[in-house]
Image 1 (cartoon, rainbow, N blue to C red):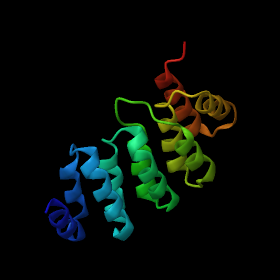
Image 2 (tube, one colour; image 1 turned 90 degrees about the vertical axis):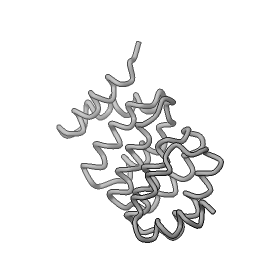
Image 3 (cartoon, rainbow, N blue to C red; image 1 turned 120 degrees about the horizontal axis):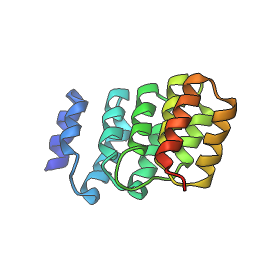
Length: 151
């Protein structure tokens, strides 16, 4: 019943999906995955925002699918989701977005998201950004390294 109601409301107002944040992951993830297939960019942005509340291992496939579409604001919401939550996420998606993106705005968000991971690969890339990055990326790398809380 909930799925039907959400699907009807989602078609008209994708942001209404945000009201479902906090639902049980085993109920929420299949619904988000189903909606992603038919959603427009605005709806996919809402899906990424709701997915931020899920555990990293649960949300990663959905966020990866959303990021592969390479839609500006959707990708921004994906990167925001990676930097959200109590558990640290895998940096691979943020690194892939950084390397494949042309938009400086999204590159900065990707670098910031890497600061919420704890991996040698993200630290190495952040250090590289300090050496080779343009000013906004350099500033984001400093912020990300501060979030890493390195020993």
